[in-house]
Amino acid sequence: MSERHSLVLIPGTLCDERLWAPQIEALSSQAEILVPRIDSCDDLDALARDILRQVPWPRFNLAGLSMGGILALSILRQAPDRVARLALLNTNPFAEAPERQAQRIDDIAQAEAMGLARYAREVLAPLYPAEGAPADLAHTELVVAMAERGGVETFRRQSLALRDRPDGSAALAAITQPTLVLCGDGDRLCPPARHTYLAEHIPDAELMILEGVGHLSTLQAPEAVSEALARWLDRDPNPQTRRDP
Image 1 (cartoon, one colour):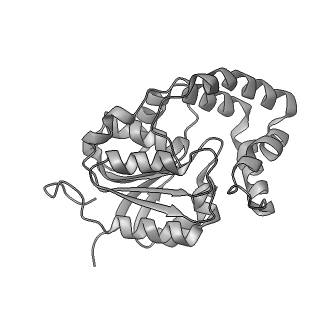
Image 2 (cartoon, helix red, strand yellow):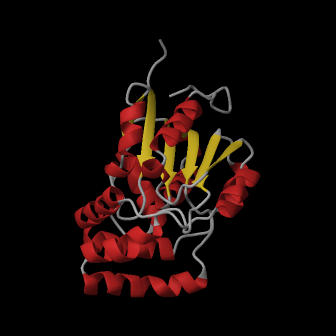
């Protein structure tokens, strides 16, 4: 029997380990799993360095969703030799668009004025289902619970980190790790075109687009995502001279 994998799962904005709950359950026999905290500061590359400090393994497999995927790309730029495989879910390789940059401060002010629970329920949660799909009440309540746990200061730090993040697209061609790129065809925040771009520019990438799925693919299509990650973990790491963690 082969050794268990080491797997880091990075959540998105105002999310925690509950975003990955179905995958943690499905993959626990295959991997030792860490879900790091991503709330220590308002600088994206510094957050990535903080994640690297949290990870106890010298090499590991790395998956991130949304902001988690952006952080995964930063980790890969900073410490490529520590990453054996890469999975990018519902994410964005580009810098923040200028119009979105300008909106971030308004988002923070709105969250403070409304209260984070109401903001998460009325502003954030409706963006997550696939376009045209009904809201899932359980998912909405989970989004609210995760946001309340994170708090307004975490939302401020994460929003500023995303606003000022560097563009990661130029570094994609240098990625040598086997990479899974996964999204939903109804993702309104990180549309499929961004994932097609990722898959076309990462040399060893597999693209998977899930029908009828929105931004929170780990919750909206848990079995499909877990199966895709299980297959990804079984791929031979590249280059072959590296030891499989």
